[in-house]
Length: 157
Image (cartoon, rainbow, N blue to C red; front, top):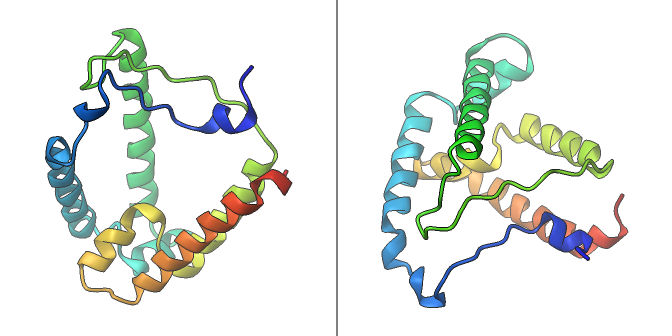
């Protein structure tokens, strides 16, 4: 039987424990840096762009988010259609999602935090890398919120 915790915990299965090392992950670091540069150049990390989105003043961020959703949908379709495999050679399995009422509360809390700070977790590092050092407070707050959620999860809906 699968417990609630196991149901939502991603499973990393590798053939050999020493197969994944920091040295083998360098490409992901390079891709992350390039992704951050794209975020900065496309103004996705701009506090002003995010505020425009929440005030419904600009389509820019909705276009970015919409294209990301479309890309994700196509990617999941292709992964399932062609039984794609991970770099370790294992088949990629996307488990069915179970709706929980707490997702509504969490989504609202996430959205409020995003609107107030002008940052969601993805671009935080790009903002810090761009020199917006005040965003470190947002990063520390996000980590504190994640820790708090983990500590209180069993008591939440």
